[in-house]
Image (tube, rainbow, N blue to C red; front, side, top):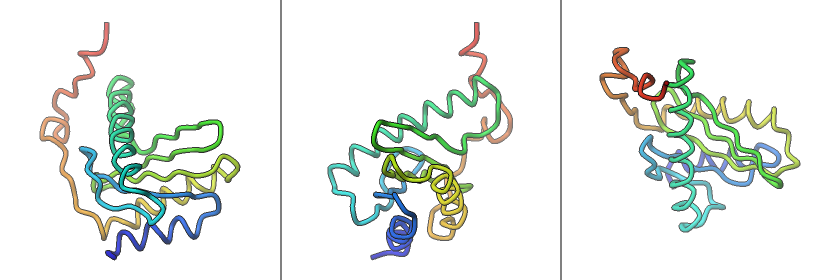
Length: 141
């Protein structure tokens, strides 16, 4: 078991209400998952999270509000937190609907910052990193 998997299991075990966690590359490839995630769920979650992450990035470009840091999705019996790391990886944690959302948001942000030593670094395309055309003007009137 690699250190990232151990760290994800630790996050799920430590935070009340956390059910499972996965880490993806920016293009949606599964990098690691906690023990409670089956192959099928991990594959489906990778696709869903990749789409939500892309939607969040589009919203930040349209609103010209900087970089995407976190997406929170609330369902009737669960929450899904999606957070980006400084290196570009995507952390996703599902928690039960009765868990403390504030605690989970804090823990997800903290984990995303600390997990960097176990994650590869993904570079942004040059046009985004240098302040070039972000595509935002293609969304406007």
